[in-house]
Length: 220
Image: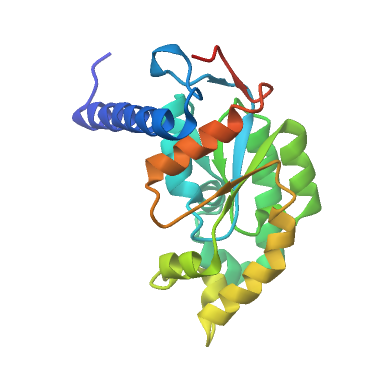
């Protein structure tokens, strides 16, 4: 089967990501990688949870490349199924409709092969979603402080919940309301502005390495 230039480029990006995370993991994790720098096999889906701007998509993409598993974004799956953007779904059908579709998509994705699953910021608030994620996978909360989150989302125009007269205060209210739910996640990994995406992915691997039911393989 012939590979297109695009597929070769994607393969190189995945290879580069694996190498970058491997080096970061050696620095941050010590013995968190298996012999030869290869990361252990993923046995359960890892659901990335947390606020908008926490880095779920960026870190999740690097993590998936490092572990050689698929990366799936639940919001993108909803958009694909509805043929409308998240903002359009909110505007036309309302948030309750969106949350119901979100739960359906999460249930379907969690039944599939192990992957890195980026969830929407509000997905983990629903008790049913929290129970399903913990029963079939593992929830990883990327914990970032409010200043870091605001710096990352302040110029974004794709966040329907921040389309208010005072988006920073809206973000603060969301943060304060959601943190108690995020704190129920199985694993917490702290974000920091000085850490690269690869460093954050390495931190997640280090945390997952403490769960042999999630990450399997010989340690170096």
